[in-house]
Every structure is written in structure tokens, then in C-alpha cells.
Length: 407
Image (cartoon, rainbow, N blue to C red):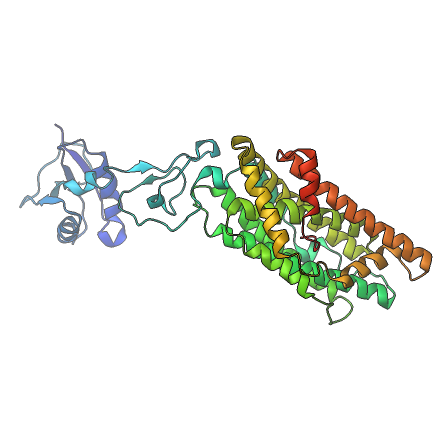
């Protein structure tokens, strides 16, 4: 067997000689040895220390071994026979699935941990504490496309909204906007916490799902910022927060199941908010509020799309799964049965925004608009439940059990 020889030239171990040696040793055939040439003064001393640490055998010819004519680097100053650890290190290694989303495995191993999907995983790593580790529990085939869309449609609150545009509102109309913004902030805080908590439990192998949840949390953080900024655009005092509203939102935080939490928050809650944001886009009295509503709507629509896609896939695989969804709605309804529901200050504010003035005729029109909003919310929930496979009459019944706090 012709020995393999590598020339380190004047490079020492303080300049990366070991990087070259590892590459050359990896290219050796079984049973081979590597000759090392070079001119660094401390090459042999450093080479001996490195080989002891790496488990390689080292032979140093007293006067150097000659090389064939034309071989760069002069005589061989040392021979390395790689130790078994080099080849044994990756024995038993396994690929953590594949890079492409189509190569996601049904249940990634716990010891894959934080390894990139598709990486060659060295055995012996610690098990990672991700309890949401089954594909059918967290995955949706739409997730990669939704994440790509989410990444492409991020917007900057500082530049996407013309905060200094000129407009004047009557004081009571401005107060109504502030009240609605106050309500939206507390709802979005719940919508931020739920995906953030779930994200920490999902196995990183399901990368697109974790990315989507991360962007969802970032979306909600941005919504909280712009709703707060609009509420304080003309003053410093926010509106009211009702005990019933907070009780409804707190019930979302109590659901530990990934699918049921997504169902209650995204499919029912954020789905209902799509109607509310469209209402604000139609009746908001100023361009800043209308712009905020439009931007938040595009983000929330993506959250709803993932929730529906994920649950529809589960429902198709297991029709009995719909019984769990029904149970989640009924449990939440029972928990909230004795609460007051939505803050009346919010309904009054929405009515005034739709009315535009305090004239009795305008208020009647505003009240009718809010009634239509609630009917649209009801229909939207029912339609999404039908998409999940519920019969129309059952979807109607369940839509009516949704929290009166909208989210």
C-alpha cells in the first residue's frame, strides 16, 4: 500500500495544522498510515502531544524518511497510524430524518435533541425534553408554505404605519378607539403566551412548525406594540379591562394539549377576531387605526390557516378526534358560564365607532352594525367547524358555545 503523505509546509498547531491532519486521516484507507512533512520547528513535539490526546500512534524516524522525488515538503518527519476512536466515533450514528419537509419522520428520537434535521447524529447525546414529539400531534403539510409566507410578509411598526398623519377626532370617538385598543392588547397578550409556551415543547425536528409558532409569537408582540401605540397616540390613559374578559383569556392558558390549544385560540378565537379586525377596517374613524387593523388581519389569517390545516389533517385521520374538539369547547363554556363575557365598554365603543356620532339614528345604525358583526363571527366559526368535519347542525350548536369575549 502506497503511504499517504501530507505537507504542512511551515504551519504549526497554533495555525491550524490539526485541521489538515484530521482531513487527511479521514481519507486514509483501513490499515493505512499518514506521513507528515513540514518545516515548523516544533512540529514533532506538538504532533506527539496531539496524537496522544487523539489516540493515534506516532512514529518519528530519527533522520526523517525520504520521499519520492517531486513530493513537496522534504523528508517525512513523522508517521501517524490513526487510533480506533477516529473510526469508532461515528459507528452507530444515524441521520435525523432528511432536510426536506417530506422527510419528516413520525416520531423523532429524543436523543436527536437540537440536531439539525438531516444531520448525522453521533450516538450518546442527552435526551431532549420535548414532549410534543409525534408528527400527527403538531404537523400540518401546509406549515412550510405558511412559514415562507410569514417570513416574507413581516412588517416594521415604525415604517408600515404613518403615525404622524394628520387627523382630528371628537374626544369621545378617540376614547372609543382607545377602549378597543386596550381590549385588543389584552387579547393579544394571551395570543402571544399560548404559542410561546407550545413552541418550547415541540421537538425541533418539526422545524417549520417551531418557526411558524415563533413568527406567530412575534406577530402578537408586534400587534401589542401597535395597539398600545395607537391607544396612546393622543393621550396616556388606557381604557378598562373587565374581570370576565380576563377570565375568558386565562382559560386559554389552561389548555396543555397542542391541538386543543390551537383549536381554541387560532381556529375559534383568532378566527373570530378576523371579523372584528375587518369591522375596524370598515368603521375605524382614522387612517392609523384602519392601517393597523389591516396589517393585524393579514397576520391573524395566517395563524387561523395553520390551525385549520393542522386540525383538518387530524380529523381526516381520526374522525373520533372531533369528539375531543367538542369536549374542549364544552369544558371552556362550562368554566365561563358564570362570567360576564365581553366588557360592555368594548361593545359600546364598537357601537360608537360604527355610528360615528351620538345621534339616536346613528347609534341605532351602529348597534345594528355590531349585531351584524356578531352574526358574522358566529357564521365564520360555524364554517370553520364544518371544514373540520362537523355536521352543519353540530357546528351551529358548537359555534354558539364559544366565549362571549370573542377570543
